[in-house]
Image (cartoon, rainbow, N blue to C red):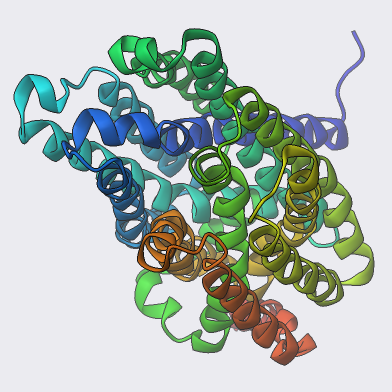
Length: 445
């Protein structure tokens, strides 16, 4: 057998790390997203009310609550990943996520144990949110550091692709079961199956992540003694970078949960489309968004992050406006096109956001910085998007009214992109280079 060269060994290690990280990410997002697809059933089963709108709003409120826990998870797991490493942190967050998701499938409902049922559901959703808050900064740093400069757009775009595929898997399981079993069976027992399935997937993902090695960039700064001893405190000195990430992610968060979570409920509850139509519409949106993400990542590697984000950000803002203004009197045929526009613009925009985050922050605080700056807008503008949209419609009686919120998120992101400068990307690299040079001088002296 021919001996494997160092270059070939590095290539194998990179491919193994990439496959391991993104496979775990698929399962993480299946676990986290499945609740959104079952929100209608969860509202009826866990939040007793004679008004179905109140039950649905309560279910979406729990969905939103888990997102507001995400920044807390980021504050714990982000610094952990910058101190002890990416691999160990990825394992811990995955165990938390898979375990809590599986336990939701075992919960007794309100009819069985009364008020304790929604309390337990809220607790488990908070654990899910806590875990998700630690996943994003850690896995994004891990993939970006393995990819290296010049390939981060394409490499990190696969994280968004696999996140969508994880949600697609959740949609296939939840909506497929709804179409096959019907509402009565889903309310009786069918809703539990997608959550219990997470336990099986979690075991697979944990096994995969046990085989990973930490990223070369992180190991290098540890070996050089340059890892941060207080990553959270040091992260706070990067105020401009954190604010840019926060604002750029704002529309990323809102359109993500519009296309991949709220749209299913909107099509059914507001437009009265059949379960079969919803099933195929959401699958089509997921596939289209996922398909263009690697393309957008390559484009941003070639032409730069800002141009790709600006063009796709404008498209995303306009497509969300079209989505809601086209709703009154819509038929499945007429509404398919604004949904496709949202899916495509979301795919191109989200393809480059992760790479942008990694390049605005230095390696030693990258996981912490992303965890802080990403989780806040996702909590405020993403996880709350279904709740805010449902509230707008309930308060005004106008199914087009949520466009004010969604278009507003687009305006915030576009404003940040307009002030984004070239030196915002080079500052982190310059800081690391200065640190390395200072260490070299000290060692020589």
